[in-house]
Amino acid sequence: MSAVGRQKRVSPAAITALKGERPIVCLTAYTTPIARLLDPHCDLLLVGDSLGMVLYGMESTIGVTTEMMIGHGKAVMRAATHACVIVDLPFGAYQESREQAFRTAARIMMETGCDGVKLEGGEEMAETVAFLVKRGIPVFGHVGLMPQQVSATGGYRSLGRTEDESDKIRRDAAAIGQAGAFAMVIEGTVEPLAREITANVAVPTIGIGASPACDGQVLVCDDMLGLFNDFKPRFVKHFASLAPLVSQAAEDYAREVRGRTFPADEHTFKLKR
Ligand code: KIV
Image (tube, rainbow, N blue to C red; front, side, top):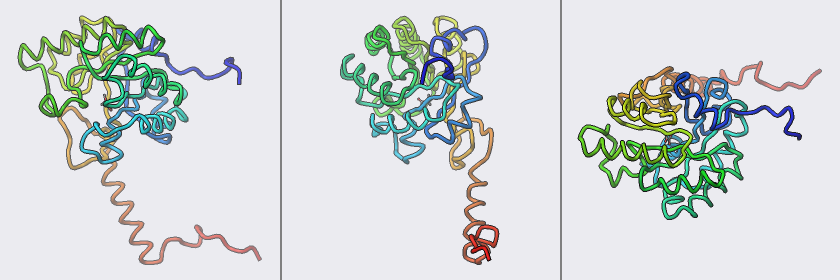
C-alpha cells in the first residue's frame, strides 16, 4: 500500500501543538472493539499498563510484561485511524539503562506500529527520555503519582501537599519537559501545583486526578464507563454505568437458558423444505 491515501493519525508533534489551543482528550484503550469506539472522539489513546489491573486483575502494574503491552498495542492499532496511539513501557523494561529503554521502546514501536511510548519518572529518567527522543522515539512523560513506584513511595494518594513533595514534582516535570517529551501525564497531584507546572512547562500536561488546570485529561476507560462499581476514586467520573447493565444481561441470559426460552426460533438454523 502506498503512503498516499493512507489515513493519518494525529502525530505526537500535533499533540504538542495543541498546548494553549484547546483541551486534549485522552482515554486508555486495550482492545480492538473499545479502541474502535473511542478513536473518533480522542486525540490520544493510551495503551496503559493499567491493563494489568483492569483486564488481568493484578494487584498493581508491576507484573505487566513487554509482551502483554505489545499484544494490546497491536489490538488497539488494528482499530485506531484517528487518535495518536501511545503504549506504556512496563516496569523493569526501561529503568536499567537508556540502552535498555531504547531496545524496549523500539521493539514496541516496530511490533505494534504505535506512535510513541510512555514512561514513568522525573529527573532520574530525563537522560533516558533525551536519548530516546534524539533517536526518533516520541516520549510521553509521566510525573506526580507513579503507579510503578507505589510500593516504594507509599501507596496511592494525592501528592504535592508538602513543600518537599511539591519541589520534587516541579523538578521532575521541568526535567522531562526539557528532555524533549512531547507531552506529560500528571497523576494524583493537588490543583495549585498542577496549575503551576502546566504554566511553566512548554509541552501539554495531561491530568488524571490533577485538576482541570491541566492542558488535557486522561481517564482509564473502564473507570469512566462505570465497569467497576465497588470503588470510585474522587478523580473518576462515571460517564456511563455499565456494571449493572452487564450483570442484568448475564442474569437475563442465565434465566432464559435455564428456562429454555433462549435460543428461540429466530436464533435457530432450520432446514429449508
Ligand atoms: O497505565 C495507565 O493507564 C496510565 C494512565 C492512567 C495515565 O498510566
